[in-house]
Picture 1 (cartoon, helix red, strand yellow):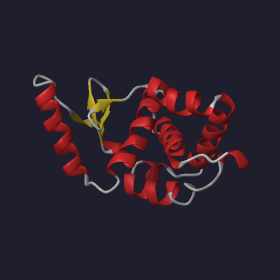
Picture 2: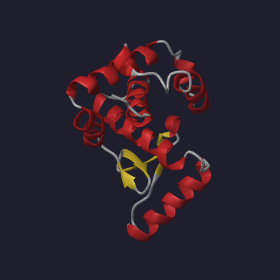
Picture 3: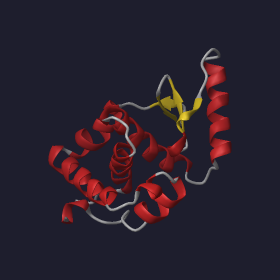
Picture 4: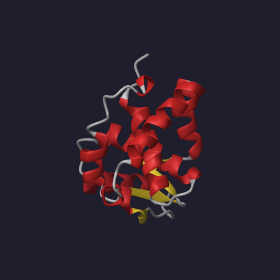
Length: 149
């Protein structure tokens, strides 16, 4: 079975968030939001992405504001305390759907075990830096097969 990069990125970001002190529910929301961010906006700068998201929110919900500080370490905006990417809020349930409902319980656990091992070997200073994390924790492992562990 071939597992694409999306669920691997989501799980890796979940364990990154856990290592940085977020609780499990929020870590799973961050994980799926980060994977979505990379999938949608990989070639769009942070400034252009956040500008587009703010414009969307102003039109849809004029009284709401996006928060840049809650998830600054992930370069994610927040709406009502949850990650906001691609004009929507992400929750723990979105993560559960993408990992466990999509791939099944057994494969989902293997993806998470794979991600947990990688994060355990990444120094905290790298986890705190988006670019270093991408280059030093994600790139070397992104094409690995979690089922071969």
